[in-house]
Length: 106
Image: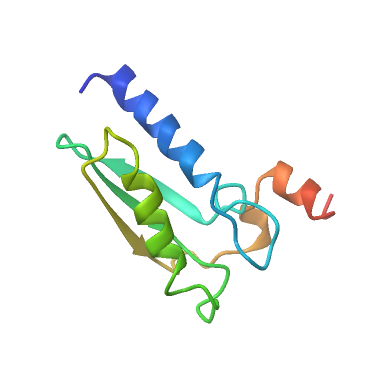
């Protein structure tokens, strides 16, 4: 896969991630800063490193599954695995300016 193809695929994944919203906060998970990294293997398998707003998040069981399922809908992706981490712990500082503006924090 060329660097250009990899970048295009990464952009597609980000567009998919921006369609997934935290049910308690009206902002998508990407702009909230919950996505720490996206890896794509040479076999077109995706691995997404993400966090939750708190370890006791009510969607801790369902949100990672939703991320996996939606990313796997991309025809270029063979498989997707989501890894949840709390290192570093999520804070409001991780939100994009767009998310802060949407939530009235600016």
